[in-house]
Amino acid sequence: MTNQQLWQAVLGELELSLTKANFTTWFKNTAISFIEGEKVIVSVPNTFTKAWLENKYHQSILKTLQKIVGAQVKEVIYKVETIKPSLQKIEINPESTLSPGAKISPKEELTNKFGLNPKYTFANFVVGKNNELAHAAAQAVAKNPGKSTYNPLFIYGGVGLGKTHLLQAIGHAVLSTDPSKKILYTTSEKFTNDYVQAIRSRTMEKFKQIYRSPDLLLIDDVQFMAAKDGTQQEFFHTFNDLHQADKQIVMTSDRPPKAIPALEHRLISRFEWGMIADISQPDYETRIAILKAKCNEKGLVLDQKIIEFIATVIQNNIRELEGALNKIIAHAQFHHSLPTLETVKNILSHHTSSAKKIVTPKQLINSVAEFYDLKLEELLGQSREKRLAVPRQIIMYLMREELESSFPAIGQELGGRDHTTAMHAYEKISKEIENNERIKQEIEQIKQRLYHF
Ligand code: ADP
Ligand code: MG
Image 1 (cartoon, rainbow, N blue to C red):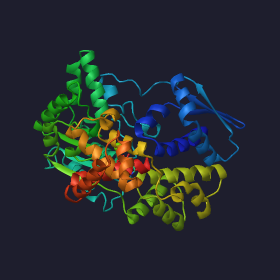
Image 2: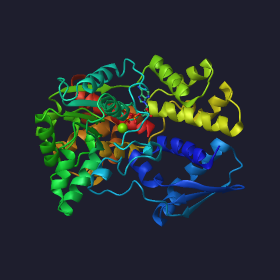
Image 3: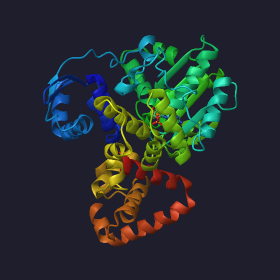
Image 4: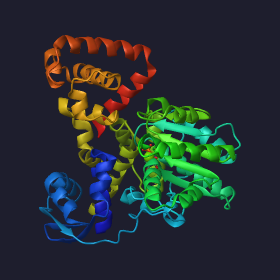
């Protein structure tokens, strides 16, 4: 195994335990520089990252390395080495706008000139009950971009379930039928950055020309569309321009339009114009099918028993399934032999050891704050604004339901509130879940993030 493969395997594992933002921030442009006896020297882009990795992620990095290559690794040293900042620059010129942007994890950097990952095609996409609607809609759009009734197409679902894959598959399919079509794949974060930059450098004309010219606009993770500095207004106009000209727009998000906090009403209503399709968690059969497809892709031959084992212990998302396979591959390459079922059980032991990760009240509160994009002080403070009240009640509900905290303890955690407030909140949310699909969905998503990231 080369150093690069080893580091990919380590990153693959770390990625599962971190939020995407954290992962990208701290692990972008890192690499194994060389290995010397018991020491692994990791190159990092700057001293800030070095300090951060040393203080916060050292243990995870060391443990993960040991898990893959064994206990012979005893030390990890971080060294600042400037690597070419190839994908980091954000400027407004067609080249950079058509490139994948700054926030793509190292694995995904392999992209074509439109920023599309060559692996994210329809051919590589396994269809199951969890994604068949979204898949069918995506295909319809790809056949008839701009002209089907699915404009815009809005795909939503939890992390690692294949939204980006499907989104980019549309791009590939359109290009393969008509290579002259102009395609723009971007994320809402990049859109925001580009817009802010364009204002700053007075290059709005250029910005408009880039964003309003494609035949197909693929925009990933619209839940991050910033509510400030006129970004949403700009996107509103971009949307209208493209839509009026019968250009196709496809968006993804981790939740339906209505549930995106701070999204302007007029955008919500635009997003709901066409077709909304969700992707949910894959069932057992689909997980098996996906594992088999991925093994094929990676040239890995695994026993049916092993595949069934992986599909049983990893249920939440496909990125995790792939992560498991990558770990197995790294192990196999290092030991020059295919693993037995026993070895695989060991490699994936942390998936089996505890059904549920232990979560603290602080983590729970943080998750909810993050999900609704609220500040901790606001949530724990005294204001009774509605935008704070409901998330607060959801925290209290989850603390009771998931952590089995007592009502007085819950009140205490939430800035010293009375236990009756906590009881009331618990009852209210319990009822809401039965009648309000949106709240139910949101709570499901919060739980997913809480236990798996
Ligand atoms: P999301 O954007 O929803 O977070 P991704 O599209 O990045 O998820 O998918 C995560 C990984 O899982 C990718 O490597 C993708 O290729 C793979 N994947 C997801 N869904 C499928 C599927 N139905 N068939 C094959 N691979 C899939
Ligand atoms: Mg994605």
